[in-house]
Image (cartoon, rainbow, N blue to C red):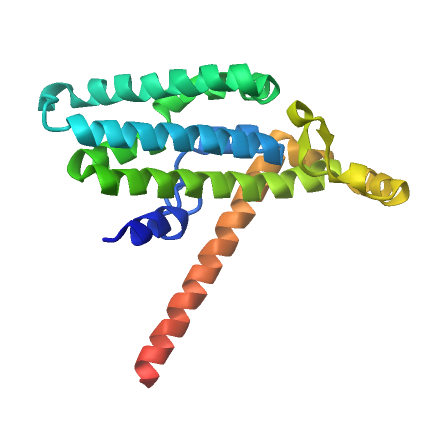
Length: 222
């Protein structure tokens, strides 16, 4: 499988959130704003790439009996690095994400790719898998966050660390006020996370089944 296909697999075919339904805890908890979603997604991507590459490099020298503890130590090392970097350069996002950054250590996406892919493939393929799965996770978080933040606050892309008060600051005052008044608070509360994720999964399953049905009809006609 080529680099491009491996990346596409993580982005679309086996998207960790929308297809494999992994990493639900951070997905549901921090997707209240786009900046938070992107921050968590990029942090997980960094850990995925780093741990995948290192595990692929040392897979032949790790005894079979202790491979899982060894993988966890490697993953924890990269989580510590990204935790310190975020605390130094984006303290606002780091403070909001809080415990969910250290919890990347036990994120089932990271450990699953280490065990199922990195431990059985070359460094290049493992790197591609980390990129694909990481960007797929980031994409899913971003899409969910866009829906929840806009419907829940009437605003989008609020980024205090970068002194940006969101898209509403660029809109006419009347329109910004209308959007804010029309916001549904439930969308940035826990029920909103389940509602958004459920509707997204339902929509994607419908589109997938529709695509399969069309392909079958074409093959039969052909």
